[in-house]
Image (cartoon, rainbow, N blue to C red; front, side, top):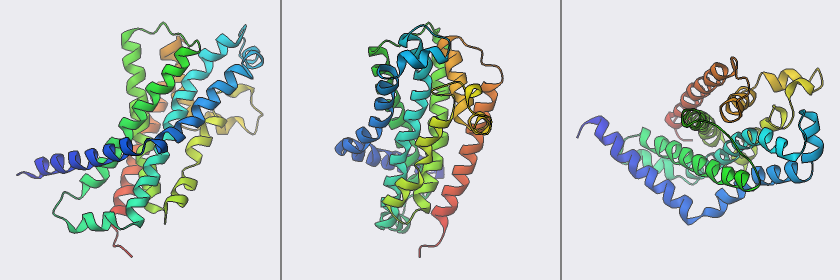
Length: 260
């Protein structure tokens, strides 16, 4: 069997293991989904009428359209925390040390976690998107724009999953991994997800403008709602490529280090 065939076979086995784990313990994924869904309902039904005036809208229906792209990306940031926790559990409980002694392709352990987490992110985005449609979100995007939006969400999920895997491997236990990954939920709060970044205080605005969520949100908003995208598409793609490279190098370095 060639090295490639061995890697595909073992990665598929590891992916199946992670998906079975997620299916048998769905409470973990559902708990991570509560934050974006609660934020969506809170900002639409409690603050929607007031916040819509801040974006030049007439009522909360305008604010639903504005907020949904940010909530979808916030869902990815929330879901990948599960990958950090699960891989940290595998590390601290000695399971990955056991995998190192077995005759399996070494990279298959990480690849199984990464692909499994991306699939969970996509499922989470679909679920949150269904809630958004149920409360009134509407779009006139073409099939090509839908495909581009889906591709951006998948790329964003892949980038932040690699970062989460690195966090999980570098953390001493699952609690530390969950705490270290909290910025992945907090970053959308200081982006253009809920209010335009140019309405923020002067010292706060650069943080909102020069972080990965804002260009991705503006790109998704442009694809689904027809707003101006400008250079945000290229900036979001560059952020994703950089985070994938950083997360991959960090994760493989942690995986290949000698166990203590």
